[in-house]
Image (cartoon, rainbow, N blue to C red):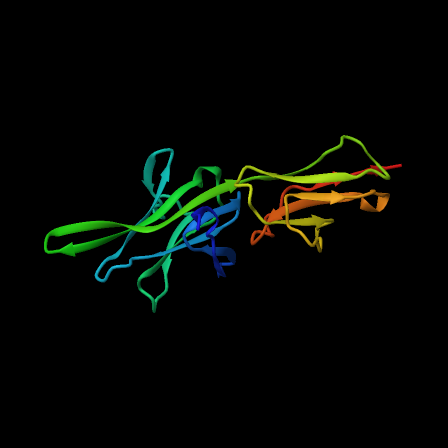
Length: 207
């Protein structure tokens, strides 16, 4: 299975009032400003967690909570091997490939191991666009949720701040034979990140 879409949502966690989605290895596409938990483990007995690292534009750096308070390390008290990287207030500069490193000491020798689990994190802004500059009653209108992230995403649509009950979850919202009742502010969000929708776009249907 292609890791790009081998994404599993484990659970929703709340840390100090901030909700975040926990991901296993794969790809994560999240809106700017949101939060994610990345989960990995040291798979070998005796190895202990060292740090999380970010590879971006062929440059590696440590995701260090001491230097950036938006990073936070955590782990289950009763499951020592499982470690998390919590990133909140996501920025475009957080995009890249994350992985965990572990260390093992034997006498005065220290070995470093890279976890096989990697996370490709894309940080995107969302924008709703309409396919017509002027919308009149009777037209067929398409609203598009534009994103800079991977194309295969699940989208949620809102009108007047309320989630629309739709039978599909694509990046386009098709409104057939529009009327004045279809006027109003529309926005979109990525699944699991419904509290971080796009800015509202006002659809004004005229006669």
